[in-house]
Length: 246
Image 1 (tube, rainbow, N blue to C red):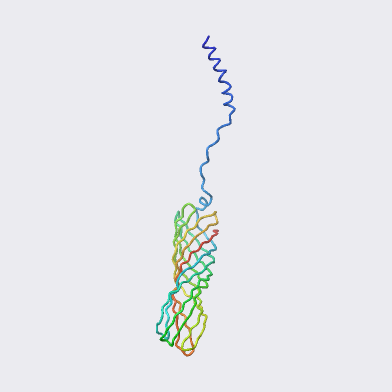
Image 2 (image 1 turned 90 degrees about the vertical axis):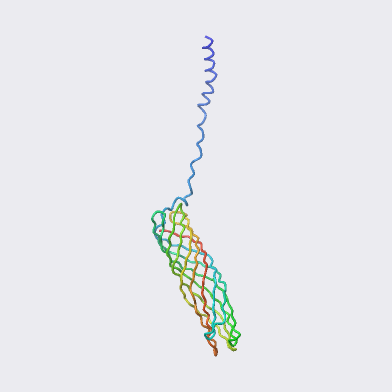
């Protein structure tokens, strides 16, 4: 009888706590599993046509050799620097992580550098010249590796541009000024990386080394032999841009 009374008292004592426990809200759920941003999930396919715009800087050198009447008399090495900007278009083929493609671009430029040279034994002769890179373009192949919304690539191919020569020359007491334009061609090689921002948009950063070969400019001064400037134009181009894929 004592045991029955004790058990009954225990049940009545614990019952309110059981009721309160049943009325408590369920425990809060744990943190959800991390999902990477859409920019890193979305673009698994880099294939197809694309167009875009770019902008950056060009820094290089103008290596000039001067001759007066066919006789070499001076060699100068002058820095070129300026802004570049333009557009690009291309096509990619993709197989798994391997991406191959072709791209063409065209950029306006205000990169320029000035040089001067003197020849005491030439009469004397003096030349002060400015080389301006007005624009350049490339046509390149690309090969790259794609993973997690990123594309890293190497690129290389054909390059061309317009180099303007502006300057004055004096010889034997006479002087002349001139403006000449040339469109040399050469080659380019570089690398870049691209990040998918959405299924159609991506951002890129690219480096190109551009060698436009040698440009020959002749300055004719009345009553004096011809003054010839042979300039080799080389540039390092760093550009950022965006692309839209169709």
